[in-house]
Amino acid sequence: MPDTAQLSINLATVRQQWGLIEALEGVARAGIPAVAPWRDQIAAAGLKPAVQRFRDLGLVCSGLCRGGMFPALSPEGRATAHDDNLRALDEALAFDAACLVLVVGGLPEGSRDLADARAQVEDGIAALLEPARAAGMPLAIEPLHPMYAADRACVNTMAQALDICDRLGPGVGVACDVYHVWWDPDLPAQIARAGRERLMAFHICDWLRTTRDLLLDRGMMGDGVIDIPAIRHMVEAAGFEGFHEVEIFSAQDWWTRPPEEVLQTCIERHRTVC
Amino acid sequence: MPDTAQLSINLATVRQQWGLIEALEGVARAGIPAVAPWRDQIAAAGLKPAVQRFRDLGLVCSGLCRGGMFPALSPEGRATAHDDNLRALDEALAFDAACLVLVVGGLPEGSRDLADARAQVEDGIAALLEPARAAGMPLAIEPLHPMYAADRACVNTMAQALDICDRLGPGVGVACDVYHVWWDPDLPAQIARAGRERLMAFHICDWLRTTRDLLLDRGMMGDGVIDIPAIRHMVEAAGFEGFHEVEIFSAQDWWTRPPEEVLQTCIERHRTVC
Image (cartoon, rainbow over all chains, first blue to last red; front, top):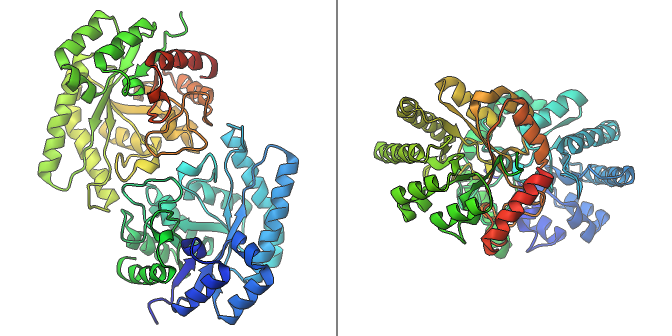
């Protein structure tokens, strides 16, 4: 098979250069079979025309980004989040996504109660799981790096995500992003524990030794310190056969380059260092 | 007892404003009984005069910063690190420090082999443990936040540090810094597991919700999201009775303020929010 057959581009990787329709066309033109779109990109393009172009181009959706952001200080805030997650679910279904990726949310502004935020996350996923199961859309909890525990996601390890999966049952699994989990001494054991059914997405990029920004300084595969082949082998040994989804937020580097060059570099690096 | 009786100032907190001697005098003047000096500060002041002034002022040393940095690409590099750690041990003894804090080091430049770096760390600590035990100086492994796994420390959780302690036996424990561990879902269990003998230091500061820099944007206690009293209660429940050592690297905020103001704020915040 062509060496792009397992490649997917998370469209955040070219979000500063391209809107959704342009990005779908650019990815297809590069011979890459799959994408992961973001909801703000979909909203800007319009759901119907976006899905239409996506289908016309024969693309596959390796995951929709994103649902989640469950914790809130008030019941009203949590209800608003739930309603928004139902819309995310509809969009994931419209794209026939492999999963709806969940970035679960951090501490509500003003709170220091991490245990409560984590309990709210679990309740929120449980509430979303019923309609998700009914619709046949897998929910993929993405453990985020601990440096995002305050403001983005209070689920920070594979073990923690899988504990939630264990308690909630079928229909919910994990998105394993090397950027978030590469440092975890328990990673091999937790990937094995996840298993084929619960490994719903595999995201790649690299951790730059000198990282200049907590959010927007991810590296291209091969430019950093992550042993990506080792982690790829772990997920494959656990049965994962899905896409390798490149997701790079890079305000000062890759977002400033011509998007065609970024995609060609993704293809080249995926072949040579992943 | 006065409310500063358990307070210690890690001298990194005022390192941009004061050299070592000035800092020792400033801390004593503020009625704070303990400090944790850094080796570069000691080198700049001279070990003998530094220790002399420290003793004359009647201060206590809650920990010497720092030994560690074990991994290297070559045996020569590791031997150099070992020799430097022997000097760190001597300095810790000169200050009669409660412990020598170990920041263990990350991946050697050019390496992606995290498991090997971790094995090197354990070997390095084992080699340092013999002279440390003979001299009666406790070694405190400081697990650093996972965002430092590449460049500063590949021991990133309390569990990982305690696994090393379990294998190496008496004389080595942990330094628990709320900044590094607050996010860890396993923290309560691991603090209890550590126990009184192995909880050798307790460092406080705060995690700012909007953190602008990976290294130099720590917050003053109360300005961030860490539930410091909860963690303090955990370490006390485990038997810890040592100092609460304030360690704040803050290039854009606290390092720009008059150092007397910084110390007074440490005293005030320690009383009100820790």
